[in-house]
Length: 143
Image 1 (cartoon, rainbow, N blue to C red):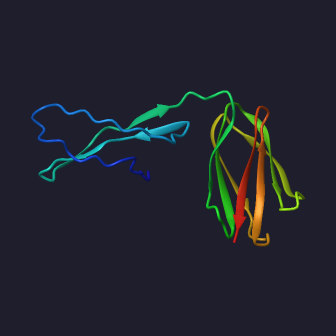
Image 2: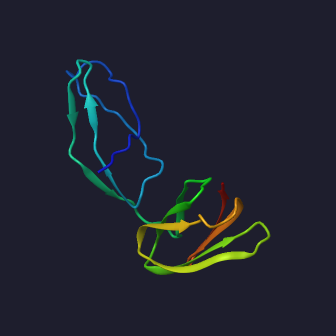
Image 3: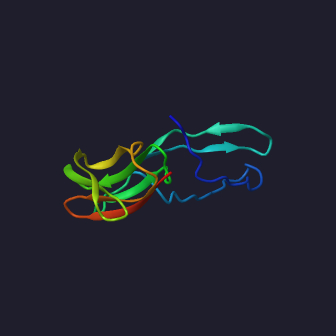
């Protein structure tokens, strides 16, 4: 697994007394795995057991992240779906002309779409994702 750091907190004194720390994950996925790595002031390290946290799904589907943006070849769209369903993905040029349209079957929870933009001219595009209960439009820049 590739681990990402949420936050670094400096040690607060010695470990003779129990210490409590708090960190907030502002962009959790539907299911996120966490572990805690602690390093004492004397350099000793300890890693906690891994825990899985399943986030309650909301009432709407939601795009979490589109990257890289700007792009030169392709983009990845991370989003959460509240149900198994078919979504419509459309890409519009600056004049509003649809240059790409496709339907994708997605599952409840976290999903990932990869869209090839390598054949498109440089410029600004609008990406529209429509599910049965939501539609979102995002600006994409192609280098």
